[in-house]
Each structure stands twice: as structure tokens, then as C-alpha cells.
Image (cartoon, rainbow, N blue to C red; front, side):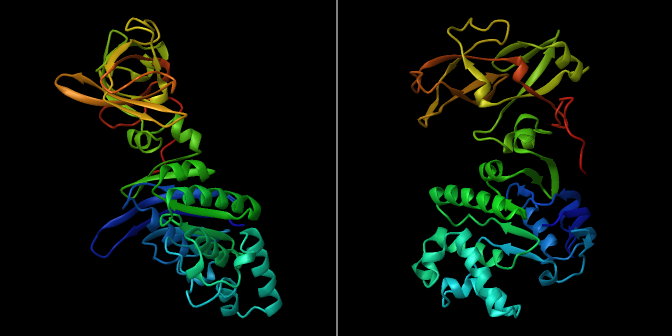
Length: 374
């Protein structure tokens, strides 16, 4: 296992483009650490800097206490798994697994033992004599993982390894990777653009945007206490509803009605007049009538625009209109509720469940936010 530390690490290209602003991250021994964000946010760049596939412009990369700036990838004791399977089509599964060990000139008995162990962990035993062309996508990805495992590295670096798989296989392989990480207890740094993948796999997650780390935390911390509007809307599916609000006489005026703010909320808002209010879809509740929930939250009589029934979940899409602007909203309601497109539904929200953000900076107004990292 290995601790990986990035101290002020940045990446700038010759034309002046900044791919990664100075970043400080500490990844613990045996941690499954996720780098997530939209395309072009810098997550793969950060992974390549750890791997040594790209040169650091400033700062230090330390693996297990050793500064590895300028150290060749092969000498960093890490193994990478890429989006493409990167396995040799003309070799059998056994030969693919043993190839990196043969290149390292390990004794044959050690090679056989490591291949057997990797095959057992990944349930590849019956496939060892088959060629990649006869394997499914999930099996090929397990072979790619096996090639990394046999090296017994200090850390695994995975760059969107499941992107080529269909939805069902991705779910299966997520479970495989989580089980594998627990068994090996090896540090893993995993890049993905899929926030669901990040939330289900990671011990901790770093959310990146435009080359900057926005927040690092556990999945629960990111979901319940997002540091800014970007994290709030990126983490969670469906995303958090965010609407503008105006504070008047201790009440928050939103496009769908007014909510009474608690003393603690009023103190955090201070003298701000304009704020942004974030509401998770599940924080809406169905009111028996438009007058329901008068004290805990103003009821809003909405016209249903779209219904997504997923069996265990029912998502209702509707809109609020204020000052000529339309704000699309999503609520998760009881799946047994009889609701159809064009029907009316009474909803309310508990103001205690609101996430409040500064309307100018889009930073959270919660007093429990972690310190900034940049």
C-alpha cells in the first residue's frame, strides 16, 4: 500500500493553457479515492501526473513518502488500467496476465503463482486459455485488471475503466472493483465522469471543475453539505434544484412561495438580500392540499410536466415562474401516488432541509462547510 500526496501540483502547457491549477491532495494508504468531474476538468491530467505520464509544472508528487517528480512511470511502483482494455489480442488470457512479469524477468514459479492468484481473485480460471476475441467486455476488463494486479503495485490508477461497458456490465464491474479493493487493501485512484459511479465506489471523492478541486469529502459529505452550487448540482441524480430567493423580514421568498427561516439560517445569511436555495428532489413532500404544511413550508400547487416512474422511485417534473422567468424543478414522491402529465399536485418543502448559497459567489452559507483547498 502507499500514501499518495500532491503538494501544490500544477500543470501548464507550453501555449499557456492551465490544465490543473495548484492542487493539494492527500490520498491515504488503502483508500479508494475518486476523481470526478465533467470532461476537460483536469481529472485525467491529475492521474497522469501521479503516474508520471505527464510532467509536473510545479509542486511535488510523493508516493509512500518518496518524491517522484522526474521518476519514470515504470519506477513508481504503480499500475494503470485504462478505458481501452490494452490487452494483446494474439495472446491468451494467461499470456496476457504473465506478460508484464516476463518483461520484469521474474522467475517462472513466481509468475505462475501471481497469475494463479489474480485469476482466482477475478474468477478468470476457466478463461485462462481463451483469446480476448472470445471474451465479453466485462471479461476483457477483468483481464486488464488482472494485468495490473499481478504486478503487486503500491497503488492502482484507473482512468475511466468502465466507460466502454453497457449499463448492466458497469454495475457488475463496480461491484467487482469494490470487492477487489477490499481484498487487496491497495490504494486506488479512480477517474470517472459518472457521479453515480463515484458515489457508489469511493471512500472519498474529489470533485474537479476547470482544473480546480471544488471539494473533497465522503460521498455523504458531498451530497449533504456541498461547498458550492457546482458540487450541489453535479453530485446527486437527479440533481439538486437550485432557485433564486429573496430574504424579506426573516422569510425566504422563492419562485413557488415563501418559507420561514430559522434564527440560525437568518444568522448565516446575514445582511444578504439575494440568495440561492438548493432543494434535493427527495426533500419535497406531498401536501394533502394547497394549504398543507403552512408552518414548515409553503405548499405549492404544481402542474405536472413529466412523470418518471422507476418502480421504487417516482420523479415529477414541474416548473415555477417568477418575474417572467421559468425554473424547472424535480420532486421525488411516493411511487404509489396517482399522478399523470398535466395533473395538479400539491408539494411543500421543509425550510430546514434547504441548502443556501451566496447568490454572487455560489458558495455555501452553511457553517459546517470544510475549509477551501485552493
